Length: 97
Image 1 (tube, helix red, strand yellow):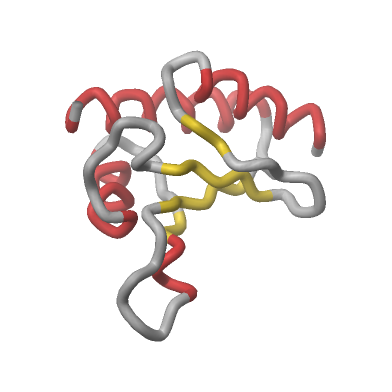
Image 2 (spheres, one colour):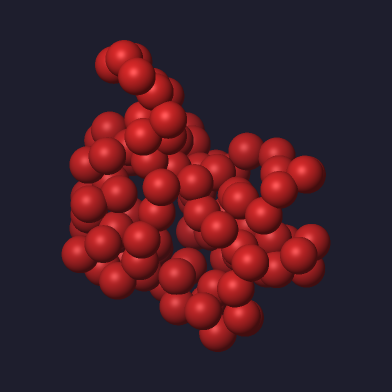
């Protein structure tokens, strides 16, 4: 999983996404604000779906408003799936930048 994490992280960071450290799970998180995306996590997650990839907005884990603008990605996938997901996220980011 470390190799998959590093593959996805490298692809995303190469396009200006800012990721949080991921050491003990098979999820990588993106800080939307630090990545230059001025949208809520839920709004960006919907945008990402329009571009072909599903993400998990952190607000889904909060009972009250005020969740940070972070999205979560599972990297327990085949290389081709990770590559397509990264490409879709890059398209989603470009669409709102």
